[in-house]
Length: 367
Image (tube, rainbow, N blue to C red; front, side, top):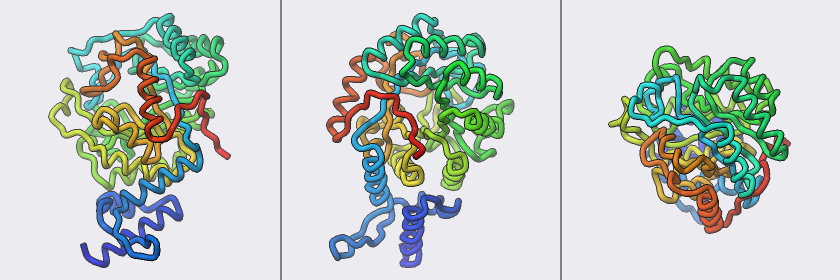
């Protein structure tokens, strides 16, 4: 590496640390040169360190300064694996005839909430495919029931793309947050990942609609998805900078054997962790999960996510018998543990890195 490019990465890195934002070209350059050695002054002496290492330390410092050692928990309830969409990367896509389909009853969903509440969860995440059986009103009624019994808890929905009137209905029913990964901000890349009837612009509009209705809104993207470039990752970071979501979920692409991408390579732990660090620097107060997908590709993935800036984990409250069926990708972790075992295991893992699971809603704090 020449001195010119060496100095360029120093300038770009300092700009990110100072301003929390870069241009598309600068973000792409930083991603491509994340493992380069650059000079850093340590105790009066010049030492060589990579941008990845520098950003990891800074992101962890920011997480600790904003959140202390508290890691927020979300109780995940995967209530249906039926989906009308045919996204090319997803194991529960409509075209997967081998998927073992299930739907939780309303009573089963409420049982999951009761289990979670007794374990200390104060946020429930209702996640599912875009299942026509769960009509707008049916979901609204489930939200109302949860809020009537667990009024001190937050309800997060993650059920895909809908019109603004539907989102308004659910907000009025008591939903607090909504997770909808934008997946990729680049329209051409979106076309690689989705069938023709789906639209990147519609997905982005859903996010703006959610923001306008007052939801704590979560966006995010897959890392290492088929066809993805550094420039496209840069576009994702710039889109998030415009949207200013309260939550950002990223995780590595992991192939599923019953999809068109069965033979594509998975995303990597190291690039996912690097991007988590960038996001924490860009958004000091954002709610940033260390995802199950990260824990799936590496045994210490979730701990490393926290040490790179994440501050949320999402244990599974779904019935054990159904967890393997909610198979978005291969070899998903925690499919055989009871909710209590899963939470206890996570608490121990967090304790080993100096953190503790918080028992509160863990809302986004704007000020």
